[in-house]
Length: 230
Figure 1 (cartoon, rainbow, N blue to C red):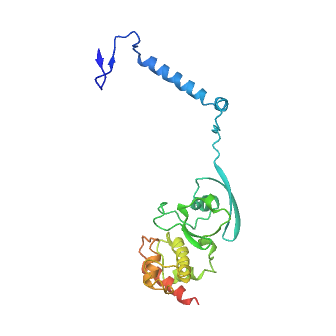
Figure 2 (cartoon, rainbow, N blue to C red):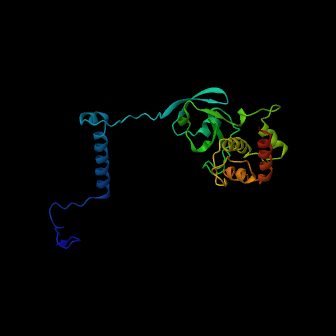
Figure 3 (tube, one colour):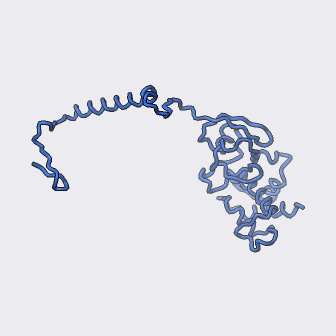
């Protein structure tokens, strides 16, 4: 006689009901259980049980999304998990927007969506139905550079250039944020119009990293464009 853990339940190990299974028998019985369970979970069985669960075997989890990119209407059929960054680079072949950390920490993938800057690696393409997206390709072209692009060239605001598209897109958004009187951690007086200063620009651009360390040149480029604006 053997007592259970609570010392109150007796288990008769000599009972005729006690069976000794070989490893082979155990595997066979397990396989049979899985087969029966799988049959019970079939769509027919589920329907007969009044279940509203969808047992569809389809793996097509795609959505059609339509948005404007650099002034042109684009329509894509993408996997629901596709980021805006991958949609731009892999589907539309706009490789100016860079994939840096892919975790929203470096700012290399910064683009403008309806005039506001976002990290394209942290948002899904299907979330931007009807939005207006601007990438570095939509700002200017060789021979007709955007003033911010020209200022970056003039002040040597880049070295390897990998972070530059995100830096430029973010720079334009920073000036608009200041113009709209959106405060930052560097804003000293919230009752006054936000002003352009080195402290403001450095704080607002802190999410865009440059491994080459061209920060002072980037700052000079932004200040020049800011001072040239009315």
